[in-house]
Image (cartoon, rainbow, N blue to C red; front, side, top):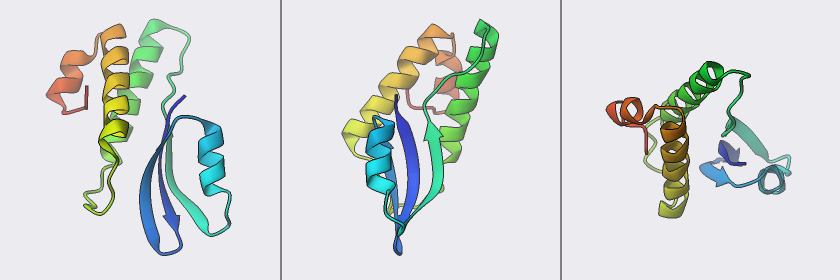
Length: 106
């Protein structure tokens, strides 16, 4: 399980990548922390086509999460984990070409 979140801690905004819900909850338990956006890396659907569409929508949502704020950065390790996820899942659901054409990290 992986999660991508944008949070506001006091007046400071952050982008964070979590490898579990426990990490997310321990980082955001304080009432001073406001979740601005939460994107779980989960694929839903009963059929192959539904899961493929779910992955496509997840990739679009992740891409749309970049609002151009240069002060918010993920580490190279976190970006590598995200790239690995989209590469594995894109290969599984036949979306690698589409991801590459649309600059989804894979």
